[in-house]
Image 1 (cartoon, helix red, strand yellow):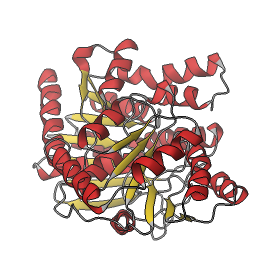
Image 2 (cartoon, helix red, strand yellow):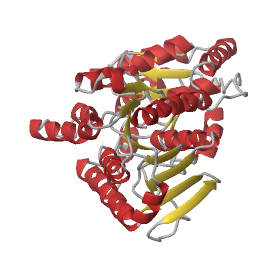
Image 3 (spheres, helix red, strand yellow):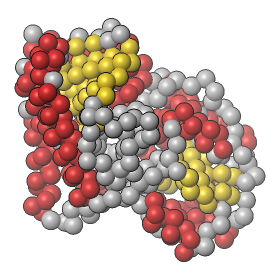
Length: 411
C-alpha cells in the first residue's frame, strides 16, 4: 500500500502530534508499505526552527527503503494567540499546495492508495483533501484534537459566535468529505458523530507508547519530586497547579516541583511562581525525546494536567499512555472523563478538584505521603495495564487493517 501522510508536526519535535505521526509512519513502513510524510520544519511550540536543519526551501529525508519525509517551510510563530496560530496553520496549507504543484509529476507517478491528514491544526485536512483529489485517492482525516471546541473552551475566539461557527466549518468540512475518520478517544468519536459524521466512517485508534521493560524503579522520596513534562499552554491550566503548590510549600518542605517544556503560558507561569514566592520549583526548557527518560527518573510522581471543564472530558493527553507504559506513577489533575478513567483503571491517582486549596490537600494527603511499597505497586499495576492495550505495535496493526478496508472500498 502507498500511503501519503500529511502532518504539521513531526519528529524531531517532541510534542504529541509529532510523536504519533512518527510512530505510526514507522509502523506503516515496517509492514512493507510505501510511506511518504509531508510536513514542515520542526518549530513547535516556540516558533523557532530547531538547529541544524538549514534554510533550504525543502529537505528530503530517507528514513528507510520505503519511508521518505518531505519538508517545506511555513511562517514560524510561537503558539501565543489566535493570530500567530492562524498564520502558522494557513502557511502550512499554502506551502503544501505549492510543494504539491512543484512536485506534481512525482505525485502522479507515486499515486498514493490513501492520504492521511492529521489535525490539531485544522487546515491540514484541507491540504489532505487537495492532495487526495489531485491523486484521485481516498482521504482519511485523523482528529488528535477537536480544535474548534478547544478554541471556544479556552476563550481564544473571545466568544464570537461567528468565529466559532467559521472554525467549526473549516475543521469539519474535509472530514464530511473523507472516506474515513480516525479519532484518538471515544469521546471525540461521539462529538464528531453529533457533528454529522456517520458512525460507520468513524474509527477510534488511541495514542500509545513503546513497550517498556524498565518499570518498577521508584523515584526519590526525600524530597518527593513532582514533574510535569509537556506543553505549557492554556489547555493545561497550570496556573491553578501553581496556586495549589504555593499552599503545599507552606505545609511541607520535603517537596520539589519540576516543569519541563515550552508554550504560550511559560513566561506567565515563571512570573507567577516569582510573585507567589515559590522556592521549591524549577522551570526547564523543552528537551528532546531521548532526554525525557532522564527527567522522568528524577520524578517520584508525574503530573498530567487539563483544564477542568466539560469540553476536555473527552481529551486524553498522550503522555498518559507513555507514563503508564513506563510504570511511572501518574497523578491526573483535571475533569472526570476519559483520561481519568484510564489513569484510575491503571492504578494511578486522580484529582477532580478545581480550587487550589482542595488540590493542595489532595497532593499532601494522597501523593506526598506515598511510601516505597505504594509506589512500586502503582508502577507495576500501570505498566501491566498499558502493556496489553496501548503499544504502538498493536495500534499500528489496527490502523493498517482500517486503511486496508478504506482502500478496499475504493478498488
